[in-house]
Image (tube, rainbow, N blue to C red; front, side, top):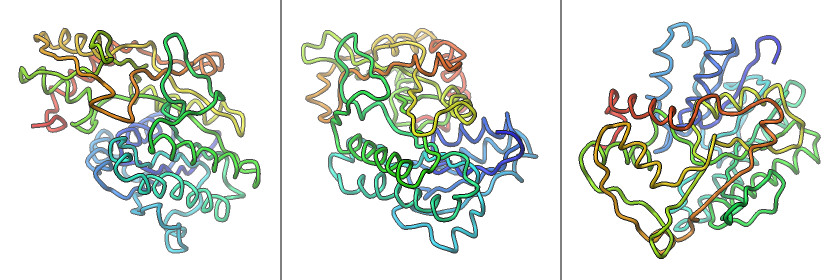
Length: 335
């Protein structure tokens, strides 16, 4: 990304989006347009706290309200202006809600993505260097033991959320193939970090351990094995996005994967140890309590590693950073 560029980040007030903004402000001189509908996922306090870190950053960020279920009209096009990069993070992502309201997720993720693609095709075609679509590990479905899915492995969506993300991926590839647009797709999984929604597992874990409450650990039916993930910190995700701006092949897919696999019991024990507190927990049958969820998800990160990117800090150190930050900034924990 040589020279000063203009970057559109959808969902920029979200948990991952605001950290991507932080990384771009810190490591580049590019200007940023945030497109967000500012619902329960989008919180402007995230962006405001980032901008408070350096007064000079405020002049480089423009915030535009819009719900992508509606097309980007001419008025919005003028507000957004010309952009060189689009990082599409905005999405409906609550699995349980997708099971109850599947059409809502088709509208948010498939229709919303198509509306953004059409904006890019009709208004940014000559200036657009890259459209990055941010997808999920869940498109692959549950991973058997010792299996880590590669980028082009077959999909097996286990819930309407993951199916809608897979559908949006297909629209991105269709626009790439049909209109020769510069598009890539990323998959990542179980992101954690600062300013995460307090109902998510890790901030909830910190709050419950702090207050001496029992933690629920989802497990297999016999309650002998906890669910596991390759947890990854938002700062590492943001660094991977920045890396991909200059290191990609148009029409390709990339897995952004955490340092190592960690099951939820080990994660809870690690957080309790960092906090110097006792862990009170119970194992709960995962599928019975949360239909549409899977015990294990796993991605292969070798492609990005071979290209020159991998997480810079261990997951244990990242957890320590987040625990310490959260205990100092308790407004981001559940009361």
